[in-house]
Amino acid sequence: MSRYFFQINDGSSPDISGFELATLAVAKCEAVKMAAAMVCDAASRFWDTHDFSMSVTDEVGETLFRMAFIGSEGATEIPLQRIAAA
Image 1 (cartoon, rainbow, N blue to C red):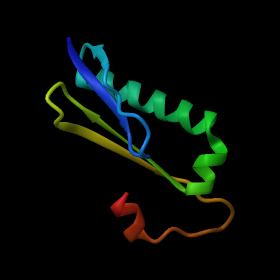
Image 2 (tube, rainbow, N blue to C red):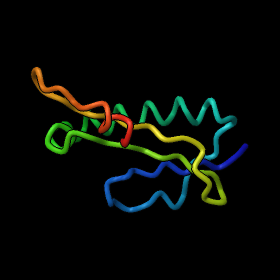
Image 3 (cartoon, rainbow, N blue to C red):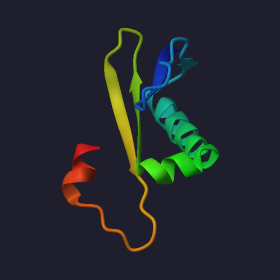
């Protein structure tokens, strides 16, 4: 089992305890679940700031993967450059 750290890229406190999970695939699934819960729990903040990202790192701090979400209400179009940068 490896320890994975789920870092929310919004200036909040870093994840210093992490979670022991069996595989990287399990960590990816957990990241999706966490992100969905966080977006739902803080929906007004998500829709006000229009983006949210999470990086998952290993025990030595190497980024294993990153997820980015961009919220858009109505017919607002988000430029592809912004999506690529997120």
